[in-house]
Amino acid sequence: MALRSRPTARQLRLGAELRRMREAAGMTARETAALLGVNSTQMTHIESALTGVSEVRLRRLATLYACLDEALIDGLVKMAIDRTRGWWEEFRGILPSPFLDLSELEHHSTSRRDVDFLHVPGLLQTEDYARALFSFTTPELSESELDSWVSHRMRRRAVLEGPQPTPYETVIHESALRIRVGDRTAMRVQLTRILELSEADHVTVRVIPYDLDGFAGAGSAMVYMGGTVPRLDTVVRDAPYGTAFIDAEAQLDRLRTLFRKVESVSFEPERSRDFIHRLAKEL
Image 1 (cartoon, rainbow, N blue to C red):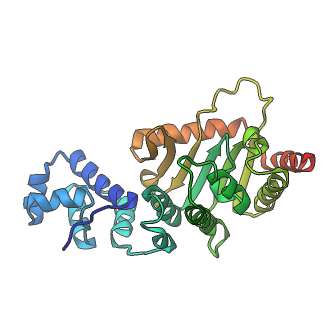
Image 2: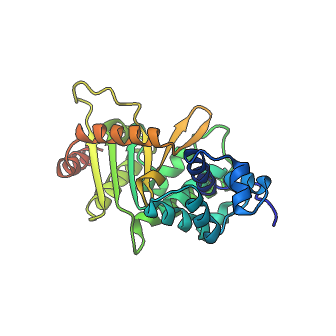
């Protein structure tokens, strides 16, 4: 079987979790390979996501590692056997890989929590807002590239608008609601869009106002996606070197706490809707 040239973030996560289970059991890759009946190179390929792993072999590994967390094992099996080639595959070779990895993770997530301070969260953006935002990208995108970036962002909204929408919570700072990424009319439409979505049962929108005293959490921006079990959650954050996919258990726990802290100082949903409605009327 040919090795994968570019494993996705989800495939890499599966390999990383298998490696963590092995290390927690105090076993080497060579020892595991011998017990599994494969060579050590094959084990390395599985853990680095260069090749897949069957359900039978994965459950055998869990037994070897004395892992008793059935929910975790079932979650890993689901990751291993899923062969979904979603809509995002249409953009492979056209958009940067992290865009596609994000779409795949969103498709499989059980919940979604966003915190944003400078821009309206991607899942809530209108087409005009997204186009204006991507038009500021450096190096500048060609017209066809810009169309692809915008189209991809609009397709991502399916997780909120499909027949089985993902539960979604977002905390947005007032600055993100006031910065006119597009013109006045586009921003008014954008705020109206947020208000419409906030009425859905599965969507919760909260706002942090400028005049909140003692708020030092402006570095808390994140996209938090829930897995089938908490250990399989993933956080996506922008970093100086690109997009970072965070999945280490200690970091996830810290970021869960950070989200709760940011959420605790934001307006309640009803007050947030009133606040956004007032901003829209001012435009």
